[in-house]
Image (cartoon, rainbow over all chains, first blue to last red):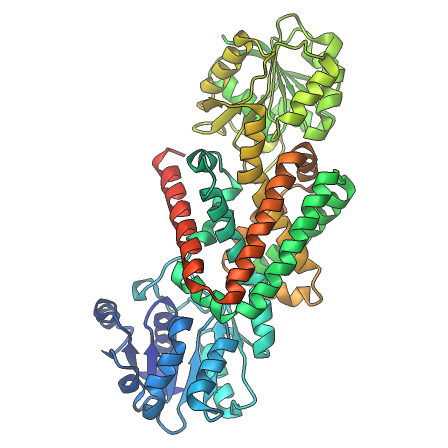
Length: 293
Length: 293
């Protein structure tokens, strides 16, 4: 059995699904949940996702050989502080935060350079739903998990976290903290900003009721991600502000250039852009369809 | 019977579905198809969507009391020219173009002010598929049709085109040409530009294979519209370049502002934007779900 006692700090879709997958694989002895809401934790207990719970992250990590942090990015630093005096010797800690630089900073602010058991991570998985009732053991199957070990991360810790995710059926890749934050800014954070900004700018127009009435077809899909949690996205933006604001500035230049190309009526250039985009998008989708989902 | 002889210039998803809906309602006597590709027209004949076909728009409109133009925006002017000497007295002409100012200009360039039977129109309907084999009679049911009559449009023509779409189960609204082009620039053309530009800018990055590998979840939905036809979108951009480049410039300013807000780490402002966007998007979706689809 890989893990004797697993502490899940934040028992929602992400944390709950990890606990379920490890339980189903028979690779975890005991799961302790930690969170603020009693109702959600009671539900996690009823569903058999956790064996017990506490509202105190310090108490939760006592005796745990593996700790998984699935709290909002804005709550990471306080969670590290709450855990600090309670971690077992040799405990391994990993997380599911969508930005990694800020989590590494938070960890160092609390522990200095002295937490070799910490393996920053990011499972590229999720659904539209949240809360433990949305969790399921298969969430991570055939999904990519990015781990961003620092100079300080021990190879044993990295190996154990890799093993944990592979047991869940995931495909684990390592990259640097900075590279992760740049790649995710481009592929996830930027698209969310585009969708939020589009819907917001339409909402601020005078006749916004009418505007939305004529939004059809692609608009619904395109703006789905603008229904994501505002608080979570505020935290992600702030956590990854450097990489994100830089790519947004470059994108806004691209948009201004495209507007000029349209203004000039330069059809050949437009066709070139649209064809390259369609081709990449179609190849990307083919790539997804090749791998089992 | 509303229409004795209907000429469909461009027998694809849009034109084919109109013919099917009118046939099913028993409101059309004969349907003549016109297009460039023999194979597609043969298929339309086999499927019973049309009764006969020609490759010559002039021949197609002979004796037709209703003409529907479903050709690319870039082909409108030539199609008007081809039809000019062949239209029956009192014939009514309407179209399905996604921009209206350019179609009105094309019509005037060919006919001057002298085509009172022309009712510019835009059915807000479509699917991911194209070609006559993708057409179906229910495409326009509960969909909005925008008509943009000009000063020159006769009230009889407007009434007959309205009746035609209502027979197809559509909800017909009138607005000015300019207003149509601004509304569609905001709700349809701008989102397509955002998706094309995003995918293109990721595709131009050095490690674009890797970038796309980590694109997950929302990215697929968000970029679906970047798989749309490059030629069609080139035509739409050029046809609606004024309204579109104007809204793109304003959007690119909004993006630069948002990048600044993120740079500054102004969480309260971010939360305000994201909450307003989520709220509008959720209300928009509730609005859709209330109406039968």
